[in-house]
Image (cartoon, rainbow, N blue to C red; front, side, top):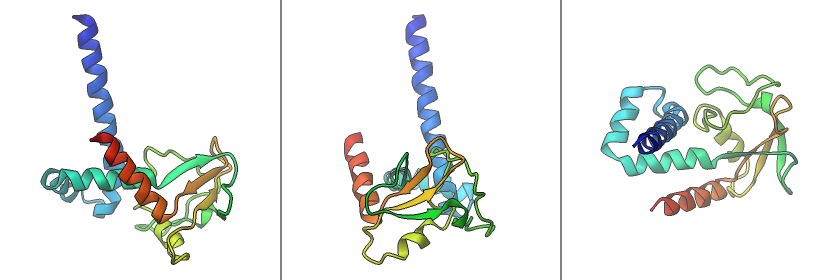
Length: 150
């Protein structure tokens, strides 16, 4: 009985953590309006899940620059709401770094075909590069994530 209770508690914690990550990643998409986000999540949960997967698919960390990627400094990235730049010693946390909170899409728009991988130097992080997948790769990874859940 204790093992079942412990297992159930661990599963609930994982589900809550997963939901919390989605909320942190997507709140900026809703202009930091929690009520609007919760309403969207309640009314169209499949779309909310897709948007969350898309935000998760945006980034990964790397120890070297992927072949063909263009490199930028993380301090070139701006918060879309405050206009402030990320510090050069920014420490990446993929559980809370929101694709929607910063101007990452603007960097992607510099490459109109949507197939360019971009890197941001993050010397303050465990891995020296934050990789922003191309738009086409983000869509592909998102669809794989959704397909694997079904």
